[in-house]
Length: 338
Ligand code: P6P
Image (cartoon, rainbow, N blue to C red; front, side, top):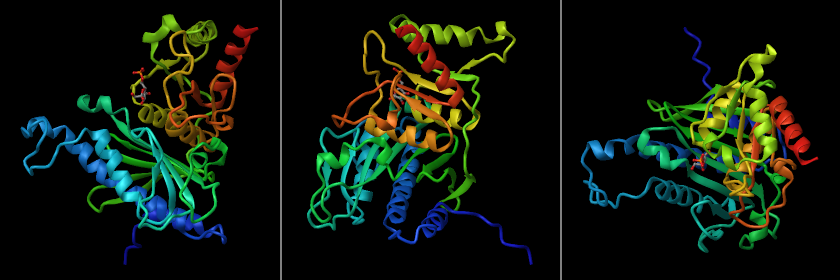
């Protein structure tokens, strides 16, 4: 009889990872499984979104008489409702919500904190460009059994116990790390399971892809201009030329660079001294993932994961990707300061 195909589901992979830690209670595994369910629900809606115009749904009320929500609000509400009753969380915070999100009183309060960007890059959905959900998980600092506090959300990125993203593209891929390798699972819609597609992803140390919005060139500081000019001259030095790849969706850009090698940059510039991307919901989780895959992530001076957050929606500049590339841009930025 043919040996059954060894397919590793996300759920089985998480449980096998948990078994390596005798002290594990299974709560983190259950939390990640709840997130995977939310991801499947969001994926279904995102992939239908393109049909809204084709099927003639009205702008506000669709054929089922339901209120058609903006996709990022829909994704936010899907994650909150999937995660608020599992008993694993004391608190949530979302890029879509001004303040922290408390767990409803009638639900058990758990020991984890979930920070998330429900649908990053959602402005791209009408052009059918890949978008994504990003999440970051911490253990609470405040006493067990009490409602979570803002301090539980404002922890340094080094304190993360897990982080990941789901990219809704030509396929839906769930990528996560608990600090022991970075693993990717592709959704098989036929069976409704995330199946292991890339185990222990390592970002190539050398990079020949750079991702940055060159439309902001005139606002860049000199050190960054010097770096970009340097890499654009690579072939004049007999080196392999670089390619510019910028999707304008952080999850898609980072996912490609994670697999192929590359550097993603959203810098501080003369208009935005803190760049654009959020520390809690985008930069910290992506930094944990990329560092766990052998890369680096800095704000130009500091390791992203060492930054002490001051506010929920704090923005930081980010230079993230292959180690050699981040080392090089760091040198150009330092030299320009001297
Ligand atoms: P810009 C999408 O709006 C986003 O938050 C990230 O996903 C993306 O990397 C960045 O902003 C794009 O910003 O200013 O280049 O359009």
